[in-house]
Image (tube, rainbow, N blue to C red; front, side, top):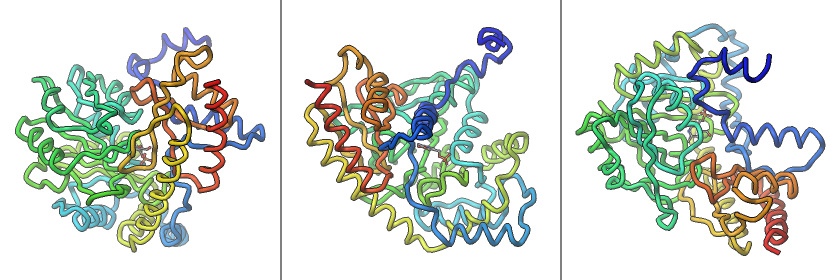
Amino acid sequence: MTAQTATSILSDRIGRIEVSATMAVTAEAAQLRAQGVQLADFGAGEPHFPTPRHIKDAAIEAIEANFTRYTVVAGIPELRKAIVQRHACDFGSDYTADEAVFTTGGKLALFNAIQVLVDHGDEVILPVPYWVSFKDIVQYAGGKLVYLQTEESENFRITADAIEKSITPRTKVIILNSPSNPAGSVVSPGDLERIVNLAHDRGIFLLLDECYVYLQYAGTPLSGGSFVEAKEHVVVLGSLSKTYAMTGWRAGFALGPKPIIAAMSKLQSQSTSSSAAFVQKAAIAALNGSQACVVEMRADYLKLRDRILAGLAEIPGITCTTPQGAFYVYPNVSAFLGKPGAKSATELAARLLHEAHVVAVPGEAFGTQEHIRLSYAVCHNDIEEGLVRMKSFFAKLAA
Ligand SMILES: Cc1ncc(COP(=O)(O)O)c(C=O)c1O
């Protein structure tokens, strides 16, 4: 079958989206690695830590006990209770177990939330830079994206004033991701409260992707779910992937108004059904167990962040904002762009990969033209090696 016939048999829906850019970079890096190339891999956003012992043990125990069958679609009651209790304990929210659904990864929670809320032509406000999947998932649902530009000089800060200006009578959803991927920007508590209230007052739904909420380096992390009076219009999307180093387990959740959670469960009942039974037991162990592992990992990310920022600052031509959370830096590489062979960040990232064997994701994937994203959730030696390689690569490029 040719590419053209394939296009004509496929739905209009699938033609509206692209392969996730981070997944594409990961695949290209894997190919090089298979050829024996030693990469400094700052591509995929995934913790370099192993999943903590007590979480793995809970899954092993569950398998040994033959807890390996279908479960109720939204997740076993004990797990949904653990989700709401963890959230209430950390953020003072007030959800009941039937306001929670466990999903096969945080991405599915987001996907399902958008599918049940967004109709053709509904406007969805999305701050730039954005995590790659937000855009495609909204387009898949037929929604109309309204991009909200942020300023690099203000650390890509998202303000309530800017959100308010983007609202129109067609706005159905606002997406917020704080701390954000890729820039690590954090919405201030004052702005978050105003955004929650202005969405609630206007009957707009706020989708809060809080998958990095435990990886905030200054100030007290806050959840949009803490504003209980506005609960009716808030959907919190969570993930165990980054918090507990569980990316491959596929464990995420949503907390929100009962009708939305029920609709998400209905959609899930016709697609994935429940998540893997033993993963649910592991998730309970993660949420109910000691949170010391989270504190330890966060402390290491902070050291890694400071080291990579210091190293990048020594590369002439590169500037970089200081991320306040998550585990990415988003350096501005505009000084190197526009030259033959490096006309765009995409071309630059390709050369960085093939010539310096450093994996980075080009900024175009996140809606900006002048940046690359580097994930610093890697071991300290890889940071050092990657910095050496980038220093020499950019020096050659500038010459
Ligand atoms: C902002 C954001 N949301 C959601 C996810 C999805 O995480 P997962 O599906 O692994 O839970 C990611 C993963 O990179 C992310 O960066």
